[in-house]
Length: 173
Image (cartoon, rainbow, N blue to C red; front, side, top):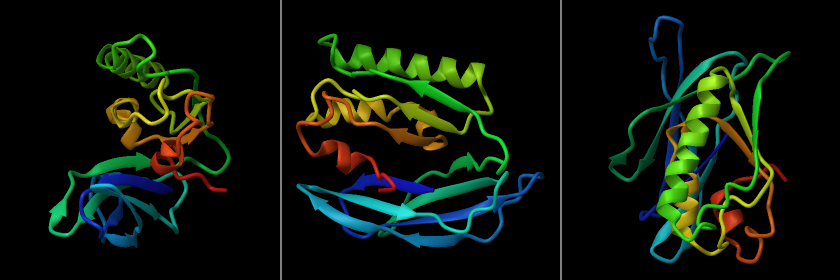
């Protein structure tokens, strides 16, 4: 699982552990992030390796002495998985990015409510309206489900004319 985040410090890592069926968290492992500078913030990317299928994991982001809250995700069984497919969220297209963000959050909440065991989200592109707009990308990523769902975005024409897409998303190839 790839984890990407932005933070104003240049060093970063992800600590992750398995959570058993009784809710007990095992020993934390560390994935050190590759980091790239971007203005006043840094983009951190870490790959969590050695994950076991059909398991619950917790993770937290560590930058210097700052430790995030703990997030959780489930790995799917090797022989089955469910996906949610979306397209053209295009945060900012209405002219009101805050309104678009609120509606996007409702959409993701509805989808995960209807399909609670989904662990994978595919986007057909156009996550934002203006490719160079950090506020729109942050709004797109703001629903809490985005911290637990594996995410596979496709670049759309509204995402493609600046390099923000590749800054926000870690793709396998």
